[in-house]
Image (cartoon, rainbow, N blue to C red; front, side, top):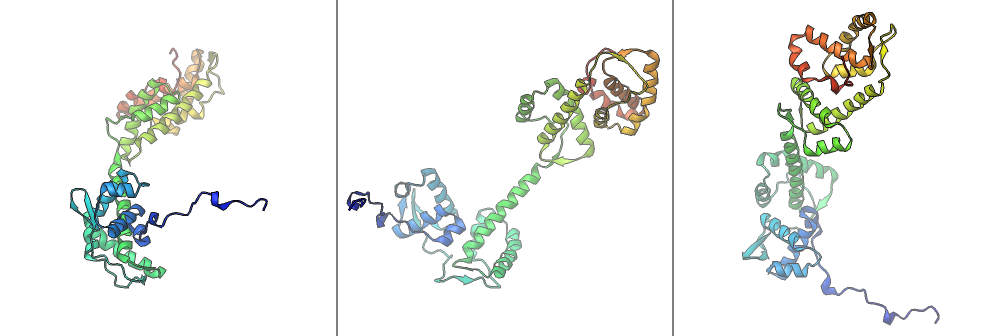
Length: 331
């Protein structure tokens, strides 16, 4: 008949039964898919070496099989009978019941599970904390399982890894050190942003001092430094863009908001800066001198007055160079 395909010439995609691999879904959920496959293979095929496993499980690379075997040995689900020869540990205390069961109100993990958890670094106190949570959670859900031991081990390891990550992060949260320096990666980011290297170097002491005095702890000093430099670079560029031809001071002049932002970084409050405006304007109105950028000159003036009034600010201000915030120009 027209359009009828000759099925005899079609490739046979039906897999050979011998190519099927069985594994326990509950075990796969608890300790991993590859682990469940290798464990089942050793259980059904008897003891074998890594070469056999690599050939039989060609879809899993050798390195992964090595990792799986190491994990199964740690869990004491298999044993190494001789060099690189492994077999299923038949006398395993973790026995699966014939059918799924609800978790019992007084569920306690087997001694074997407790040993395995401890061998993987989980502390006894942590197990005691997590066990009631585990029981309550699964009791409320009313789910059933073939092995609550496997499920508890999986839960415990997941929670322990999360706790380790939390502790690891906490150990990295520290106050900034006096000799702190940005990482190479951070400097490369600033370089790609076309920020002047001298500007970065000159801004570093102020950044360290600012956070040292606040005694703030962080695990992301590089990120804070990047944000600080980028923000100040934008303000610096804004000041440059305001440069005009030399002009005299006029009665209506007032500093830009960028000036106050820059001064605040030197811990000079706005009220003090504002209080300096009348004196600054009067002096320069009388001199009738010409300047390219009165904002830059005002920043210098305020810093000088602040330094004179606050002797303890000497160390702070000595670290700040005017070209960080303003344009180089002749006094």
